Image (tube, rainbow, N blue to C red):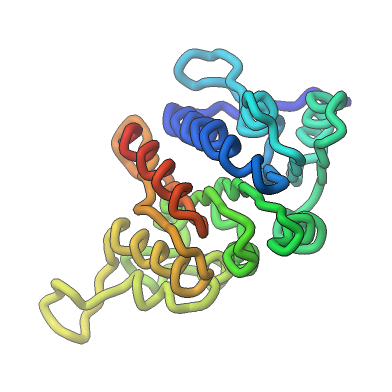
Length: 269
């Protein structure tokens, strides 16, 4: 097997991993008494990373989920990279509750994984949607909300969006980049949010809106269009210069889940 090249992650990614682990440890104790509880990692990677700060090996979200005190009933790990998938298989080879898939998570989640988390079967799922960029389809997010049995942690890749899909001059955005944004957002309504005449000298002029405005519009979309009941304000994950790389969202149907995540977000903010 080809030796995998582990991803080097910054502080912001380590914070994110801490948040996910804290939530899983807290909420699984509540849910497992009533339901089969399933963990889903759509961009699982190799299961471990290298810390940019220390150079040490850092457990990724799959290993953190596998090693919590009260384990999930099932684990589903997905990644495009065949080498990373083989490492995941090796790391979890003694665990019959682990299912590993190589391929596009947009297809695998809808066709193979989400059908195992049906509300009427007394199953509930925690799904991590953690793309590096705009590599996720809105159909996956919307399906999770419609099912009422799947809650999500979701990375909103604002740096990729600002670099490629939303520019100060919209004419410089290629059709390919605009389509990536549309697939993630779900329709072209993002264009109305991304460019606004507010604060402009003339009404027919439009300028690029700020990150917070776009993030809040997407939060409302998770509620109004995807059907999630509980969507706290996302936490901004920033690099060492203070630039926001991602917004980390949590979306669920359960009030108690929102309370737990809200407290965790506050502690990390």
